[in-house]
Image 1 (tube, rainbow, N blue to C red):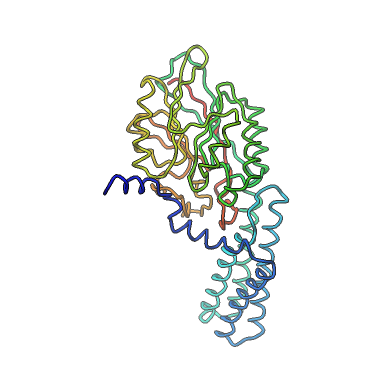
Image 2 (image 1 turned 135 degrees about the vertical axis):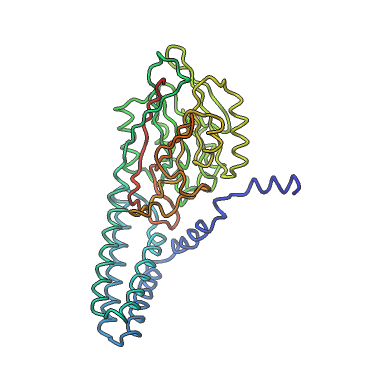
Length: 401
């Protein structure tokens, strides 16, 4: 492969080429549809369910009940999605979010219609009704309740590189804000900072939502929020996924902020009593080999006897961080799966390492990795829901071993 081909390969937006992203883009197309078009689409999906039941049972009354049931729950979904911005929970366009939910409801009803050939159609209709009710309950929990329940996770990490008499250092880690418009979650973060007074604040990418990553008003509100962050030892940030944090928009945003955007660089911080720690801040391209090579170069810039904290958007560099004996590695990206099912766990993580590092604390040798579930929600046509993956910020206390 030629040098030019290698360069082009490393410049590819890996996340944008994934099938999941392409599906999300496809389902995002209804954002431009009129209310009439959306209404016709709902009616067609409901009539499709009724037609299947009518074909299998020849009971027109029951088929009409199926159509009515589907329309009723479709309308319920629309109402829930419409009230979310008013409640300052999420601000995604409702038409794009509606269709993934509607397709799940449609598939469930059609599947039960087929099963009804064996079980009986009356019982199948009752079960279908209960499943649709369960879907609405899950949507209310996942879209209204859980995204508003921001959790503060406390964590204690000990390092032999800290002098024994060093005072504990409290570090607030914030990741994956995914701001569409400022929400209750950002209010909670600011209140927590005011009461807890962390000595250092670090952010690990994805500041805007994928649906709004070229929207000037979104960037204005992100700037408003970030401008309110302060800590005695500073506020440091690294970029997120290139698909989300479009670099030509993100980098200028930091020019007028009292924050340090770390772009493949290190910085030594002097704490009280002369103790120092080293921050390593990396750009995240999701080309693991490329980013690992950058890590090897950046770590050469800091003394090996200082405690080292790596800020990188994704957990994908954990094997390399362990090899380099980094003390603390803070990241996000996975959202903890954002939607988790009992026993099964996360449905998706968007990580090259799959489900190996999904959320929480992992230890390997000297290295402590904490994968934050993040604050915000995925964009485009992804429904703005969290299930068993509450949004979180993390207060890390770094102590001498």
